[in-house]
Image (cartoon, rainbow, N blue to C red; front, side, top):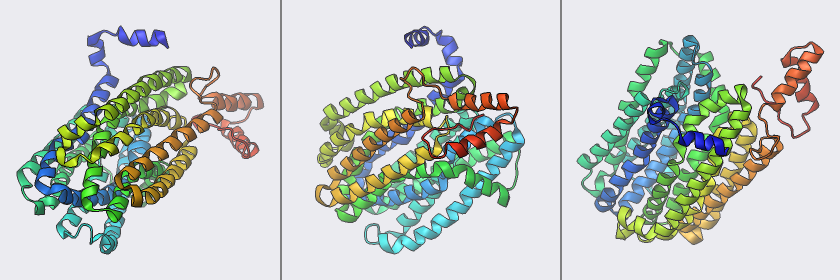
Length: 472
């Protein structure tokens, strides 16, 4: 691994700049920087114009939009990206995939709008503005309908990322132009909605120009829903964990306190997203490398664990030590109660760094979707229960601790799953394709198809803890 690290350090800068992976990482860093850095530019302004209570109401409405976005997105940014990577040389299949995914998202959007209208009676006392309700609902739908997954699967992120960044910049400028008084809170969500419509609408057109247009059919929509089902639970738990925490806190505490909590959480997310683009860029490549060069894939995973784990630790220490300064500079003196919340979140950063590597570089490329979903589902339940127990007494700090507890459980559970599947990256015999080779060897000796042998193994080992990979 030391030789690999030295090789990376000795790369020719000109070759590095021409490397497609580097382009994708840079593009994704640009998207993530805008996603979390641009709100840091608007947050001090909104805090001053809207006040803690006004901003707390907007944060509550945004949490409702996040719930809608998680459902409409349906995990397609992972499952459809993986499928795009596999079928990148077959335009007709890609066109059918796009039409099915967009058709599924339209169906989910209709269901979410109906659910939002029904739940309006339960949230009216916290966010009474009807304009804010519709702005957050439409924003959630627009946020869920995006095509970044398609270009990520093709490993051609530059143009799609530029459009995404352009939409976010447009939304940010609109906030400064339109929001001037406490009653303008709904315009915050409306501005973000306009940015999403512009960016995502153009990427849909570009994707269809790439592979040709097809109308969605019932079968393509159903196939898309089946494809995204395995990742929906993960993305829902991941996306809803923060949203549910904000909804719980907004229900049991003054909205001003919700604004203070949201400020600390947003600072933490900026540091967390600094770890995300590398994993997103490596995911399509590792999905293929697991099949073609499993030993090389495992070396990449070990290097990522060291680098991103160490970076997560550095980020966590920086947040903990610099919490008072970060809150003062970014949020302002009115949010001084955000400091203890931010320090608790500092413990969360190293945990999420390690979990992210395990997810995108071990669990998903090796198709351990069921185990992965189980851990995320139970972690989500643990986080919600902890939030409900801690929020009434400890308020914002209790909500932050619930996130740390759930993430620690996730890290431990993922480690156990990978160990039992023979995918411990630090074990000498770790080999993600061992199960696949076993099936091939038995098929060759018996003169049968690999699928017949795989079925036999699934039947005979259904009571064991072994994992038979699907990538044969």
